[in-house]
Length: 231
Image (cartoon, rainbow, N blue to C red; front, side, top):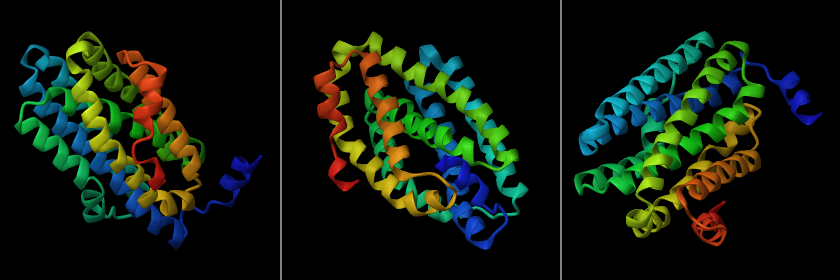
């Protein structure tokens, strides 16, 4: 029962835990802010689905406020400068794609990569979270599946026209995810979250999303391998 033992050993109020939490908490706050901004931008690019995208953005803003409350509950100040640097690569790639009108690339970054990253992290975190954060995170993760579904459905409906751009966007952005997972591994471990579990859950969620869109198993194996050597 290694996970139960890990929970028993966690001291949510220790200096070591709170130091690591200051960065992890900042990452989830910034991640929700990025998602809010991205869905607002997508609402401009996909004007026919503007109302739904604005609704998704509002959900992300609520999530951000929930995670801010988690930090306050533990009396931790989130290290937002660290978190903004953490997301800098994906942030730049999304902004560049949006400026070029590349909806497919924007959806891959936000609706697949960021959502799958969040779902994996939240599912691994929930069993080892403090009681207040657990309740908040359980509510958030249910919403994230809805956000993932939006991107999946749009890309599935436009798969033939999107396939080449999706593969290029995957090759550009997936290596950033492995870099991000490595960067956060030490702090995540302090919170009781194993890096191998994070990688595995992300790959499962991402692979399932690619499959739902229309990629073959061979395609998914090839696409998922991008940047794995850095893990």
